[in-house]
Image (cartoon, rainbow, N blue to C red; front, side):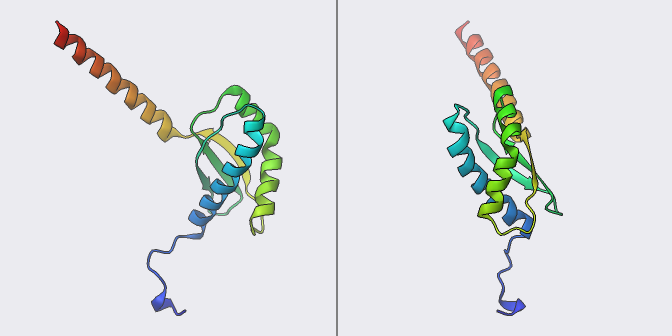
Length: 123
């Protein structure tokens, strides 16, 4: 296929790697973490352009879940290495997705406003 016929919407490599890592890690966490009583939901993965480090974004992260992830980071990286064809497996780190945190704060503010309006309508 020549360059003129390639689709214009092709994804950069890093975006494809982000998605593959998200899928692999979500499957691994479902198998491993759920068996130990941890509910961990991945909202996304951000791999640095040099592919040496990846931040795994989570919807929430309890102290126990954080400890479990730190203890099992190497096993999760090994699963990524087994299931992908990457020359190097990025070093994983885990953090709470700031979009989820901000969304929760906005939702709570809207609830407070709604309750305040409801209180005023009753009087």
